[in-house]
Image 1 (cartoon, rainbow, N blue to C red):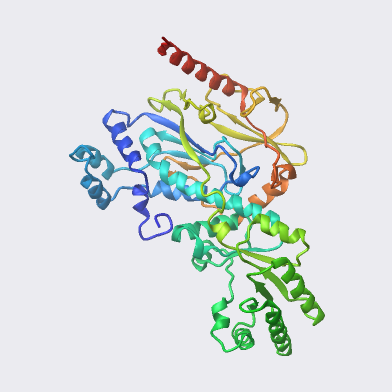
Image 2: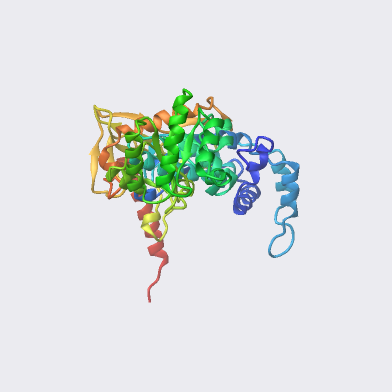
Length: 497
């Protein structure tokens, strides 16, 4: 629990893949400690077949950078590691270097709650290449999962059509850290509350919960269980009515609701957690209305996701709220965002110009975008996003207004005179947070506004319209030049017989 455990914040230094540290030793030993790199974190394909993703997790990065230290225990552990061919894996001089290590990097990120799209930089890290490299694994772990959860949540919230959605996934989440990240990211993306009490305390998220089937089963009858709970929690009374039979359960709930009315109290809601949710919710709504209890709400749970919720509401199910657990907490049907972190520029010293670099790969699909990237979002007069431009102000010929589609180089758009906003914002300078951590509510409001402004065609679940992401033309030409030069070199070295 490296980032969530305040008692051991420095554990983040070893929250990494081993090859990050072996590379760091290589940079140190070859005299590259002063060499600088620019790395960008991005994803290649939309999660869940969506038309967008919701950026989340960047607010944790300043804490990650500031706490990136190697304790004596860390150094001792690294000193104990053996190389496969024998001997110590790490050299004494490098381990001594780690004892006084601290980060001096700059980090820029798309603010939490903002929408992001394939291949554009979500986070940019610049500084000593050794330090940038060491941050890779923890950084990707932090933003990748939270972005995935926030995106899944946004889809669920869209399907719910304004009805409250509570996050119930802690018991099914991927470990304690997973449960905390799910609660946080799902709140950013629109969940009204969480069942996770620790997340409520740590992040200020509203918490919600009443009783389980075991409460009902611990009494001789369901009616006695309902009466006892109503007496215990009259201000927080939602009754779970499907322990045995929903039809009998609703009759018992009606009895308790009327008894509460006599005491000047009100039954808040009932919850159904199994069965034909559309048919049962209609039956329950009819019975409450017939008994003069129209204020009692109906809440639904049971392995819900955006498609189930959409189907229920399309069937006219009179549902007032949803509890979504397993499929949200586990990001069901896509276990990872596939976020990557690639070197896009380098320089031998801080006072020298940047040299753009890119990963070519034998798969053109995996070719990266070079440069010290920045990101602009363009808007129409009504505030709807039109497209995003990746550009590099460090390139002399990267000052144009023409945007070249990343996926279709034949498509160009002139952005001259179109309103835009810079998306990458500074969050760390010289290894220190450069702004106060923003309230979670700010990210939540940003997400709601961004989703509201997005073209509905991009938000639809089935075959969403592709959102335009492009490179400034000068950057696109630089990228093509680097590709041609690489292919030319490869061609010269290949000999066919």
